[in-house]
Image (cartoon, rainbow, N blue to C red; front, side):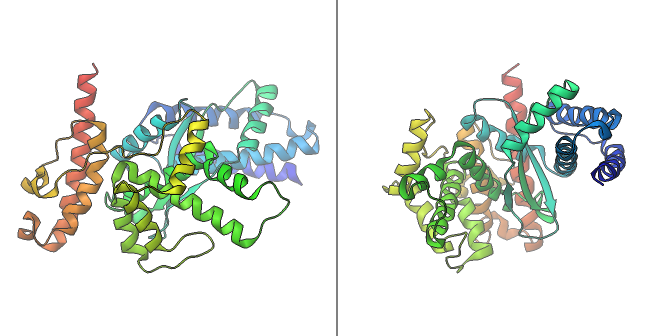
Length: 354
């Protein structure tokens, strides 16, 4: 039965690859990853699956499912769907925390207007897959995807895209086992944990992602959070919005926070950098945005702050120069200014590095 299922998968993937081969990606890594996936698909298609034992057939079924999932994210990570400027900023942050080049930031678009979340990858299966295909086909998938889901309708919205810094924080947390280490240190290794203990772990993960984002974009993520979930109370997965906002505000004000000290202890044990402010805030009232021109960005510290500037310019639109513009145009103006500011910085940086 599983052989027939694999045959069906291969026929389905044939069509998917046919539709995806014309995709234009923002970087060579995604192109190479697509090629690696196709080489793997082609090798499996040519193999005599019926000769493999049940276990190996089962692994191949999972491998083909992996290819399906990877293609979904690649298809939603093309230049016409996800702005290069957004990926550029996120990759800059990733490079600061992960030393190797084995990751690709990829996105999938949801039809729900508030769907922002990080999808973890099964690292054990990834290793099993590579061991299997290297032995059988002499192939290897060298990159892992950092999978981030966001709403289709907001994929080019630079006000809401600040949430992606939070989602990248979840990836860093899981990859470096930060919240997990704190959890095991406090509750030890047990066969099961209480609902209260599990809730605390989930809340710790959310606090880490919140403060991770605020290192780069100040309170911009908080501002969006208040728009979409003001008044939300504690749940099993998330702290109350009020608590999350206060946590970030205390960090930005330089107040001592015990949980951040715990984060930094775990990071120090791995010789990683500490959680600290990594941005310079623009004064919205004297920024270039007031002249309706892109903000000049002079450093990476200022690069990420342009999202905070966008939010400040939006929230002050009744009193700044935007008040001369019809309300329905203000949103588009801010989005264009943020995008052009980042784009100009990218161009200038490339020229300086020639």
